[in-house]
Image 1 (cartoon, one colour):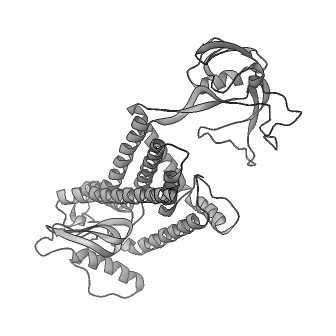
Image 2 (cartoon, one colour):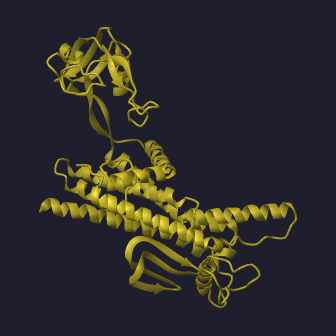
Length: 442
């Protein structure tokens, strides 16, 4: 029963964290919009029927039934059609009707006497500031959470203490990683190294990191090495000779590299058969931005490879394939992971808190990057429209031509509908996959 309650608590933490992130995202749009004089009719968290709202000044603030996003309603998001001061009363054709409805909804927010307080009449830079305000808020939240995670809780990293000492030598490409009767004893175990030994030096070189120790061992096959370790408070010198054996080659992301045929890459290196223990170390403030940058790159790479990633999700959801633990995941999947983390009884509470903070930090970075995609109705689509307008006006001025006026992004409403349908379909697929074949930490 306690585990169930903790599971639910983890989900609630993510739901509340996501709602706060969405709310602050919309505040990132709201504040500059009001500062620049745009009339904001609504500030809403969620979509669908309104659950609660209250009006302060000219803006209605509230919550809606479906907590899958949020919005602010700004007057004059779309300009009237060229040559018209207001939207037309009627039109023919499905797409023309969509465009006209968008113009009408945009015009409905304009009150008499406030015709100049519209979004499309702002300068290009002001519109960009308003639209980037939301993603920037998510970026700030992500940076703050990463600072709490890295500087407050710390990051897990390899220590110079031995966490494991292999009993035997098993080639990396072997079909089994179990010791057999004819398997040779691992050099580290044969020399007398034990789990818990802390490396002080190898062959006279002081050891300050596990990577440093690994490099020396791999470069010294067949050469006896004097390994100085601290054991039970005393210093002990052990002579160990690395064995030349086949090991996997790892990339910068700690994943095994693969060749053009998809097979793991191996090479022969020196091997003692020892592995590091991990430790949690508080990081300096200088580690925060690089960690955020790495997360941005990972999310950006995932978005660029999204079609291929979604094929993998389909194969996993409707077939025997396994889910990619580094692949896309829905809010439902994030909630399940949070629930699993909270209900684990094998890790201390402080580690659970750190994991949940890391989850929310990554979620905000994902919102930041995703909203910059230059497609309507995402914030990046509006930014792209404003930039295109700025380019047109710049060249018109250089060529001494008349001001071309605002870019009519209302014409992109049909494309926006397509994007919304695709995003909705993708969300439905991910939710289904997270229900039938979820990514799990257990």
